[in-house]
Image (tube, rainbow, N blue to C red):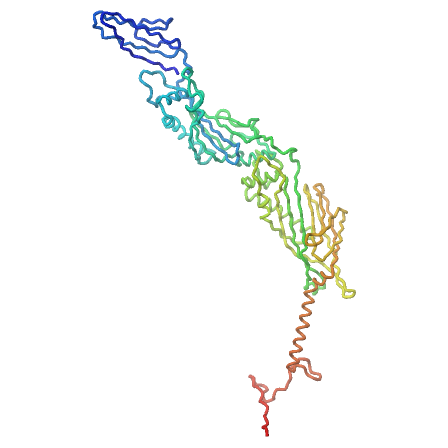
Length: 586
């Protein structure tokens, strides 16, 4: 390691003798100093002669100083300590941060551990640290308190208060590969820096942001087809340290690389820069939207519109349940759903939408705005179908929330399960009809619905009619109509538009045929009211008849009799009639 070792000897000679002391140095050692002129560099020897002819010579103090001819540790006058900051994103659900203090050489100025005969050793390598610890000159606690801890106390606050902006919960440990427990802690014939001593401070769960979004969302978008070209300001780990070298290591998830590296390193002189790519991107890449829209119009029931009879019309009021489900498999990136411009992605699949919602890349207001657009389009479509009917759409929040549930695996970003935005409305509209008593029949005016294709969407329209009504349907463009019955026996008509039919529209004409039972049910309230009126008249008639309310001759029915005594006329109070006279029995 380059130390100089100085020995002091007391050389003596027996009385009457001249004694010569010869020290032969090892071929690996070099004489540095000896207090005798009798040295031989060829033989690498040192000679002292002690003469004591009269016994008065008490001896000679010999000084021998030597060092290694070729030290295996290069000379250094300063410490070699650096920092490795590792951001491990290989498990994106739990991103860890490790601050590793890497010790190659330490200065002994803070350690009073060397014996007096050892000099010239101000800096020792990692092997020397392990040697000293193994021989009791130093301890791991001493190394931590005097070398490691001061560096951490200076570094950690800078990291926490940087753009990283979080409090670290660090646990400390020595890297076992660098302690005396490693396979070869030191070799006294070759003392060097290998392996380096490493002190680790680890936080198993930190928040890393790339391009102003959580790293999990960023990497998920890469797997969903995005690319991103970044600079040092796009990563929220921008630490500037003075007086100490450091390296930042970014361990990326499997199949994601930055400039072709799965493990990317940078430092204060070489900043992070490059393009992120994923080998898991969709194949082939998305080039258009994939949205399936299903619109279901359910005529729940039809009732007589009694007030319409007084205006000269004959109408039914149809209670209608309207529902539209937009199944979003792949959508075009829109202005409502903001993604930082550094991220290059045109189409979002359903898993990417879920991820951005879950990681709050999309704010709550952005999502509300996006859904509100779908609600407005639903209202416009249904209003056009029903010829200007005012439709008030309501978002089905539960359906939307349920469709956001997923396995959370960002390594398998796909569009297999869609995100569903469902809107519904309950409205009433008028249906005309014609009725005749003879022949007894009721004819509902043919219903016409205007259906329109939607750009880049497949749209399916279904109309379900009440039980008891059969339908004959036709459309103006001779599209394929699907008819059938629901599980509860109601007729339905269905037709579809593909994604290329945005400019097409068709008018669906439905001729409704009512069953006798349905007609009876339709007029049943009127029949019941009529029966009740008849019963009421009969009851009144019987009551009046029982009380003598029916008069003979030309007087009106139910007119009260004028048989009260005249002496009670004009009284303000009721006076009962006089009791009849009783004849005494003989």
